[in-house]
Every structure is written in C-alpha cells, then in structure tokens.
Length: 471
Ligand SMILES: [Zn+2]
Image: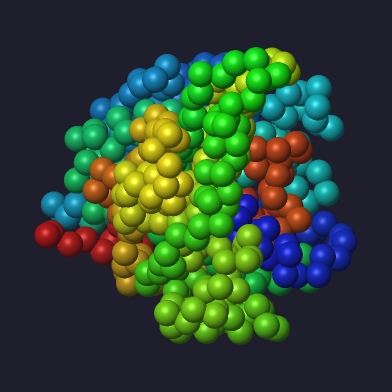
C-alpha cells in the first residue's frame, strides 16, 4: 500500500480515539472466498524479500493453482529480470479490443521474525485482522488477482477484452520485472492498467466510517542530487579564506530558502478539493481555495508550510545527508550533501538540477544527479475507469467520494506509465490511518477489507473487461 502519505494526513486531521477492532466477518464464506484465503495463507509463507529469492517458488506454486483452476499452460508465462521471477497470466478476449492489465507484486520488504510479535511468514487471523508480512503490501492484491482468474474460469466468463494479470517479482527493489512485463507482447498494447499496489479507502479512526476513496493516477519523480565541494585543505591552525564546509553550508542555506514554483493539474486540484471538503476549519478552507484557483498565492503559501500538502502543490527538494572533513585538525578537502527531490509530474529531472545550480549560484559547488531517476507521466482519469471503480467501491461503501491523487511515495505504476500504459492504482482495501503497517512491524489488514478487496478486483475485471472497444 502506498497511501501512507494520505493516511498520515488524515491521521493528523482526525482526532484519533482507540476503538475496538473491527468485528470479524461472517464465518460462512463462499467457496471462492475460502479458496482465496487459502491462497493468501500459502503465499504469505513465501519469504519473497529480494535477498531470499523465493519469487520463483511462489510463481511456480501460483501457476500450479491456476492450471488446476482451468488456466491453460499456454496462457501463463514466466519472466526473469534482475534476479527475480515474475509471472503473467492471460484470459483471452472475444474481440480484438486492446487488453487491460491488472498488476500486483509478489515481493515484500523483508521482515525479521525476531522483531515481530507473531511469525511474519505465517498468516495469522486474530481479532478481526490478518497479520503477516505482505498482508497489505501487496499479497492481498496477489490473492485478489488469483481469485479473479479462478472465478472467471469457474464461472466460464469470457471477457470481450483480453485481461492480463501481472505478478511482479521486484517492485520493492529494481522494478526490472515490471519493465519486462510492460514490454511483453501480451501486455505492451494494453489500453490501461489497474494496479492493486496503491489507492484505497480511508476509514475514520474513531468511528470506522469511510471518509474518502483514493485512486492513484500519477507519481512524483524521486531524484537525489549530490552536492560536492572540494578544497586544497591544509592544517587547521592555518585557516584559509575558503573552506569546503562553509561553502557547502551557504549552498544548503540557499536551497533551504528556495521554493519551487507552484504547480497543479486536474488530478491534484480534484484531490485537494476533495480533501478540503472532507475536513472543517481553516486548512479545509485553504485547500478548497487552492483547488478552485491555484494562482491564489496566499493559499499556496499556507500549503507550502504544511508537510502533508506541500508535495501535492510543487516540486520539493530537501537536504537529507551530509558528510565533510577527514580529521579534526585538518581543513576539509571535501564536503558533500544529498538533496532528495520529489519532482512534480511533467518536470524534467535535468531542469531541477539546473534550478539547484542557479539557486546555489556558486560554480564551486558541483551538482550531480544520482543514478537514473524515472520520470513518469500523469495518467489522465478515464470516465469509464473512474465509473467502474466508483461502482465497485459503492457496492460496499455507498456514497463515499472517489478521488484521484498524486503519489509522493512510489510504486511500479510509474514503469507502466513510462511504457505508455496509463495506470490507475486501486486496491479496494479500506483501512484506518492507525492501522497502516506496510514495510513495518506487525503488518496487518482487516479481515473484512481482504474479502472486499477480492470483490473489488473481480468487479473491475467484469465491468472493464466487458466494455470492449476495437480501436
Ligand atoms: Zn507495494
């Protein structure tokens, strides 16, 4: 799940009150629900962290389950990239309409069993929750894809459009299997993708009432710039006029004082407007004002002081690491700092580097981008996709506002978007801000959310898959 940012916002907005755990769902489940739970339990047991190399074993097991459920072997393909294994499964369509991709990732951030209260690689149902590494990020999504495929086969459903289901092997690390999937002949013509790895509903911490449902339609670009100052140095008893540490400090001061230009697009205005409507008080009013008119400088200035919302209104860059000098009695020969930037969609990484150089205004400070940041375009919200998501969400949570948002964290949706496949992240999972434990200790998912997530993906596959178009 990658709605931690929003969730933190809401956590700050909603007076948190401790409430009893959600009531457990009725024990009499449909056979497909029982099967999905079995799959979920088994796949939590694969320690698919990068260093453990268990994605191949997990893909192999899932492939067997799907073949047993009626998927012909020729509709399953495995891919290897960057030391990880991925799998794609297709359900051919009855028309030549372009296929739809559904994506989830099999890998997890590792968990140290000694640090957990329960074994992270055993699915444990307790007090209305499923506990285990990957219960939210993203093995509930994997289970939802598997469950959807098995239901289509069991119910002999033939979609008008081809459906392709991707089981990514390295979303948490290199995303190289995602790139391989995006280039695969079954996938590369996909009209759009539904990513289960982000998006979802937010429940009021105190009452458990659904507040808002968020669909991820874009991601900021993650880029780190290394600032380096070098100096001949010397003995610290003989200070020179120039000093690498002071020179770097002045550059950092200028970056601290600089604000990148205010930016907005249809998606961020929709998101900020909805967040403004969801909350009372002065912040809500400022959000609504900015959404109505992003040129409102006073509103933009107020949001610039809000850690929760600044990232949705502009590119941000902030110093995160610092290193300098080599001895207490020597003048520094080198001083370096890392500046981490979250770049607004549509802004080139190199233009941010140029802005930093200009703001620093000192040719003695070298600015270099680290690695190769991945820029990705905004996926324009499609009325058919938003309508299908809204319908699926309202089946369980009638009337809740369904709104797009710009991701400040990251998922492999950006890899699909870069490959030209518009991507919308929607998990169908609702949780409380206080229940977010993805990547952390004691990761958990409300049991009701798990079953609702299965239905969410199935409903989207039925509705979107039936709407075949031959363009
Ligand atoms: Zn994830």
